[in-house]
Image 1 (cartoon, one colour):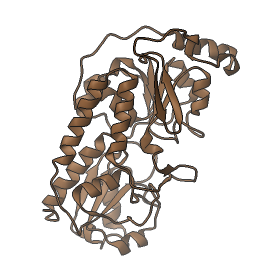
Image 2 (cartoon, rainbow, N blue to C red):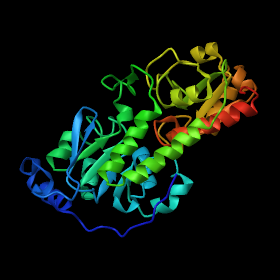
Image 3 (cartoon, rainbow, N blue to C red):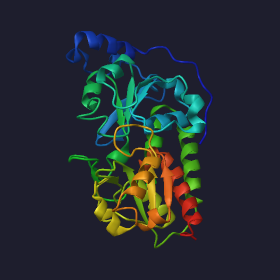
Image 4 (spheres, rainbow, N blue to C red):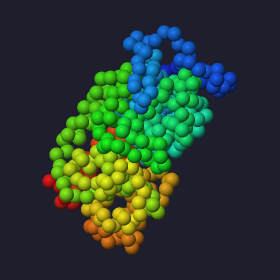
Amino acid sequence: MPIFPRRSRPARTSAALLLSTCLTVGLAACGGPAGGREQAAPGFPRTIDNCGRTTEVHEPPQRVVSLNQASTEILLSLGLEDRIVGTSMWTDPVLPELKQAADGIPRLADNMPSFESVLDAEPDFVSGSFAATLGKGGVATRDQFEELGVPTYLSPTDCAAKDNSGSGDGSRSKPLTMDVLYGEIRDLARIFDVEQRGQQLIDGLQRRLDGLDVDASGTSVLYWFANSDSPYLAGCCGAPGIMTRAVGADNAFDDTHAEWPQSGWENVAERDPDVIVLGDLTRREQTAESAESKIDFLESHPVTQDMTAVKRKRYVRLPGQALNPTIRTVDGAAKLATKLREFGLAR
């Protein structure tokens, strides 16, 4: 994916200065457009239909806080590192090709930041990948930010044909496709006035996915994200579904529409997958975060040690970001295709 030249760090905008005032006088005094701006930049305002709301910007944002790693890596891939004044919610090291661009970007928190810490960064735009982060029960609701004059954007991958109202990670009424992620890239590129860069990023991802040319029909794949007590396993229709369809395989839990349903190991052993994809996470929130800890568990637990994939050591290690709807989903599909060929399970 392309890396674009750095630019100098922009000065604070009127919207950023407004936030400092709002923290002093309270939310009620801060309704209305950001900074009370009367004139828009050339080609602006721009409006985006986003998850049932309208996001409007009067100029390309200069001080963005991206609340999730996935959103941050899209912005970095668009060459917008000098616009990012804060990031959070990381499960993995940054992509190697984005490391230089990411150097110096403030990490507000490795996990969920506070609303106050986000406001302290004085953003004029806030993006997020999950409703659990940018919504009720998360950092703050979109209304709370927008009452301060700060536009927000939520990844459509977490709202397109998806119900987040229940417990857990939500459920999908139909399979997610890469087109939804491409739509997110186009939206952000339009908001930041870098449409050509967005199309270049999309074209590169499409070429890689279309070029896989693999058929693993008849092969069952299990995706384990985390937790050894009650494992989070991929349902039919999220990012793992994209990878499974790309290689022509079958998801061992294709019969559930929950995004990451939890299951007992007896149920997993009964399904006896041919291959197990392991989330290789660097965070430390749950049991069995790293791929190595997952393998140790599988090979020592009496219920799992005799499973086909375990006995034949058919493991595929993927970073957590590849298992969520992100630009890394294509990386995940490519690695899965390579490993399936190595295992002799794909043509």
